Image (cartoon, rainbow, N blue to C red; front, side, top):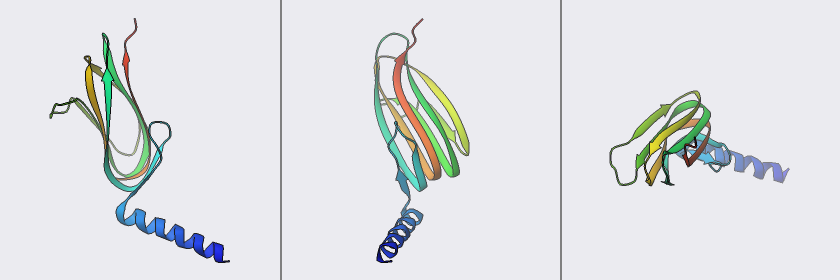
Length: 127
């Protein structure tokens, strides 16, 4: 009985924290990340090399509430090269043409509630 009471208090504490401050559970890019009233930003840097290179970002998910944004830009630039916004259910592969340089991939969340799977990589077109 004592164990159930402690478990109930832990669950109530996590619920209270998630409702008040937001919560993200998971580790991108390998697993889906689950969000509960989460507002935040994730910043990743990619090095593109070679001829006909591109930055590939794959996103899929289902947000019951809030929004999700992907921004790709060359490191050091203040203006975004590409911005995509998502709400609800989505699945897309973004290919952004790149020169040999560093690129920033920024994921922004605004009051997100649901799950999102993200993967990012620099690749080359092989013909």
